[in-house]
Length: 269
Image (cartoon, rainbow, N blue to C red; front, side, top):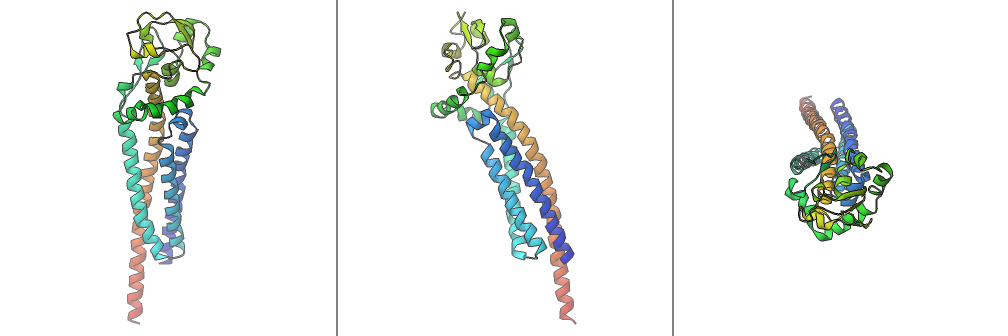
């Protein structure tokens, strides 16, 4: 039984290591400017990673020190956490399955539309209360001001590959027909009615298009890209945890079987 318990402990040590990518994914999301403004996914991921670490530690201690109730706690709790992680992986995939940028005429950058994204993500930014806080956070960054340092001529800007936030928040929608002065200053729109965002644009550098649906869509496009990357990490870790859990169950069962045989033999000696 000692050998089997050591195997269980070693397996749970691997489970402890597998919690690190989950916690790391959550920390990485928290360092991204858009995710730090929205604060949706990083904390659930970090908390889930920490819980997996704690439960795996309990299994590690229970295995090496032959504490049966800790091993039983590990088996039940880890199963619950694996199910929660699987649900999170599926959830992230489902809410990010929709939405992508649209090509604009004579532009290298893409345009973003809020209706292209999942309803769940849209509800996270449609509320004026929620968006006011996010907008204030985004506008405090230097992402738009940096464009003025990089692009002086109109064609240089039109040929630029802007990220979704820059495209959605720092300039008016292309279809409005605004005339380029610099990346964050545009005049003389051709058609103010082409898009509701055409009326939202402001040359005031603290306003720009932060109130536009295109800015909300750009934010969701960025979130989608980052969440998909995190989801890949979570999926790989999930597969590893399932594999470790199944091996741990077999080792625990073998340990209990050895213990029963040992007690059986002692009863006849």
